[in-house]
Length: 138
Image (cartoon, helix red, strand yellow):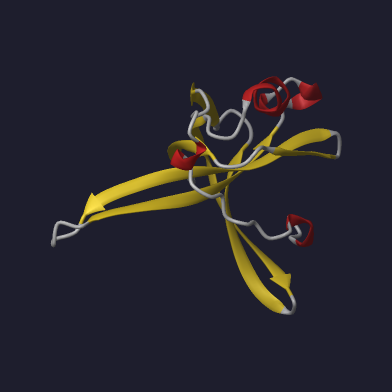
């Protein structure tokens, strides 16, 4: 049996972009996970890691995108995500590239709203610019 799963908890960094593909809703958004540690010299270092999420709705609009993401997900909301780590390869300008994302689809995925949106959006950080995904063939 082959198995791969990633679990993250963090804050939503951008409003979900919702599209419909072959009659199924798909939401794309990013989650910021903050890391903090002290160096040997005692200097505090803070980093934000961004994880792109792709969530697929269940059949006939009864799934995650229609019932939860579309209605309740906003910038700054704290979420828990468990899904399939995906590394897709595509070509742009004649150059091979790779893109990482966490895919939520089916019973092996978990998505939980664990907190409301932060009043101070600076705790989320600046969401990075994402390349135009219309050019990515997946």
